[in-house]
Length: 333
Image 1 (tube, helix red, strand yellow):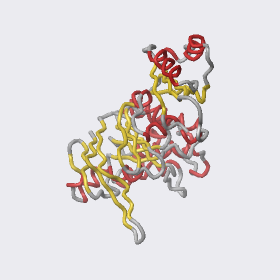
Image 2 (cartoon, one colour):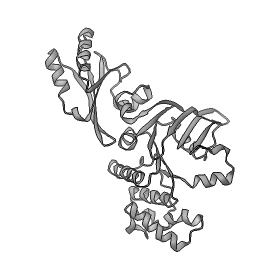
Image 3 (cartoon, helix red, strand yellow):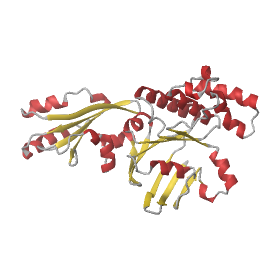
Image 4 (tube, helix red, strand yellow):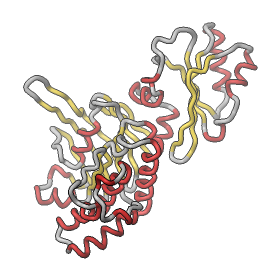
């Protein structure tokens, strides 16, 4: 449904040239929840603005349902954009207008009568669980409630595509989870194709089917979320999954490995069995369990003994267990 082909974008200022995107390509299937993840400065926001041509790329193509958006005239592009909704980190609500007026706004723009728009707006507010807040102002709502209003407003335009640009970054973890559940529910009920732009791996793991990893404006890796978690290939993906910002610098000693677990064996005593088998201690540097598309996945960072021969035997022993994934880490800090 959405095809991004060899997209590049450079920003020129009086002092510098910034290559925000370089030859980025990927495809999003109809009805899919697709993630784009990267650290600050990776080019995520530029990419999402290029998808709906709020930002015109220097080169490359953007296709929606096989139609090249760059070939459309202004009128045709406006029509196409009506099917592309966006929600933002900052909500972008009209603070001087009541909640219901915010939701009515896109309908009134296209000529729907005020009474009809109000009736439909109440239905959309019910979908997001805020029908009782119709006559209050946005500044009387919590951040999560404001984002729900923003989602209701997007639904009022009956989009086929929803672009979420860091839509949960300003929210606390519990509110983030509820908003993600709402987006999943909307995707399922209305078959809206969703692209989620984020720097948070937990968001990708919770909601997306597949994702692209951006680094310095380039596509570092693309895969299913599950496979990305099990076998990250690029350094950018590894940094995001290993959450390396929280690591202790310059760890010295034996080899460090990462063990990835499936849902069925997250409680298996893998490390205890390893110690019993070789009669030597190991150091657990980090361990956590994540939810990926409704299934539990675990990972553990372990430092093995200094003896390289022994460490290699321990790795071989672990890899004999086909239900786990074991990889050596050369850049763990």
